Image 1 (cartoon, rainbow, N blue to C red):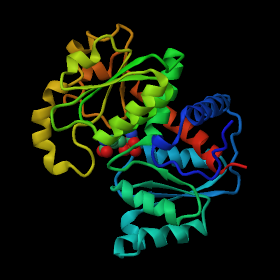
Image 2 (image 1 turned 30 degrees about the vertical axis):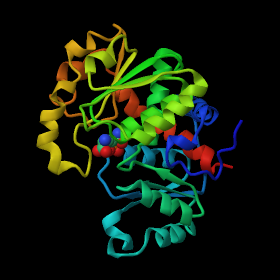
Image 3 (image 1 turned 90 degrees about the vertical axis):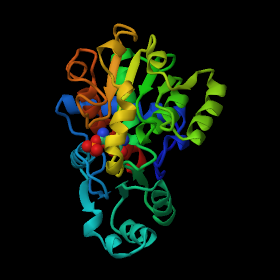
Image 4 (image 1 turned 90 degrees about the horizontal axis):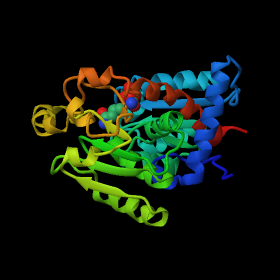
Length: 311
Ligand code: CP
Ligand code: NVA
């Protein structure tokens, strides 16, 4: 067992196979206890700050509920209400908050700001989404896949759409657990090269595949899982019209789904835009597990926090 206590969770690049499986095992146990109505107060008396510089439904509510269920106290802070918005540095904010709370969860724009905060803070920093990564989402996604398919290694996941923060974290997570990934994006919307290269290097050690293409049909052929996300991420609103046009051929619809395995899971981190990246009928189909993913945010994040700051 690898000790996770005191670590930051900034990207999945720093968490290997053992760490990920340890979190997933803990999440499974916490979910079982939760469903039985048993106590999961592993963080009694602790406090966790949550800083949001972008909107959120799932991340905020699942963390806030989960922290309370763990017996700890969540303190939700919006960027605009902090002195951060009036010029206090991210480093000073981290140093001050470290004197009050046991961990800090942050949703912000630049990954670099999160890294600066992590360097200055003396308590674990958890990435609640940046422009580049969304690692908490992927823990919940892996838990969902495990529950539905009993394994991660050797399955084929096709990501179709914008090569964004969720796509990046999927790529980095998948290489640690042996999920094969095919990514189909329009030209110019590919995931960052360094992320793909980093995963390819790790994949070499594990003998699993990572593949990028501009052809969605090619990516989803015989897939066990099809994953998509919004075409316009938070902060890209000005590009929305152009993105709608360019990404239209990358919609998850019945025609595309018919190329995957019949029991393929359809996944989406949500919020979904029905009629854009995914059709209404696919959202409501039996293949679609998006609400299980959303539920598992709660259990996966409780597991993560209990391992990072539990006694
Ligand atoms: N998937 C996800 O992170 O959702 P929110 O933006 O609602 O937190
Ligand atoms: N890619 C999306 C994910 C939302 C959870 C965004 O960054 O807006």
